Length: 292
Image 1 (cartoon, rainbow, N blue to C red):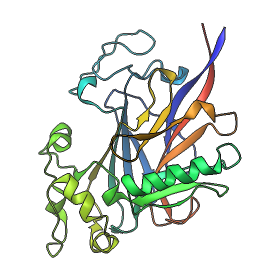
Image 2 (cartoon, rainbow, N blue to C red; image 1 turned 60 degrees about the vertical axis):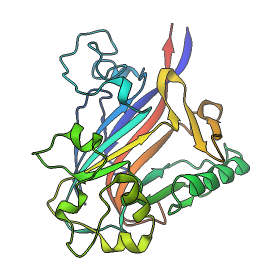
Image 3 (cartoon, rainbow, N blue to C red; image 1 turned 120 degrees about the vertical axis):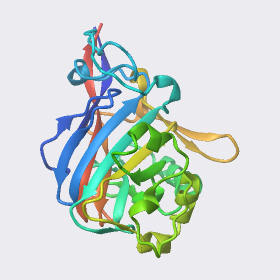
């Protein structure tokens, strides 16, 4: 019998509070009540063969008719694995107070220092390429006790929109034109197309002019093929020059201490994991499980 590191996804309203398992590839949302509002999360991962806690609630791919344990599912999903990236995280947030576009942050953090396990040159090179080719507005400290990488949510997500009941989720995601301007300040001119919105909000002065309004439900979709998490193989590919990528095999560095990281949505606190007000913490952890 051998041991394999299996992926486990849990979500909570903060780093130090009780969390719950997130079903994968089902389209089901897990709701979290936090100090910045009501948040929800749904996750899709290609070829997901998750831990034991996912066996009776998750699918290998979206559209499958059986759960990971082989039991029949009654899930009716419009998503299919053919149109999905390696990883899709869908978040909804209904703020309980107005939040500045400069303050609502999204990114990664970790409660375990990584400097003792990952070479410094590798960390520095990866961060440099991330800043150059993915998001120039990131603020990061990857050498501290609780490393982090944060940026404004406005330029971090593939899709952002108003979660309007008159328009279904799939339409919001598939439409290249976003509806974010529907509830924004009329004096703030917003690009309609998603790529133009990302570019627009890479200027922090533009982020400062936008406000996420109290009581409005916002939709955020994060899509990436730079992470490969399927079939118990975990790799990061950061784009560099031309069609090249800077590749990191996660299993090479994972151990009993460095075995998880978070996707975090919060208000304020771009300079530290313990700063600002937490909204949602989605934890990805690798757990050792016996396999035949």
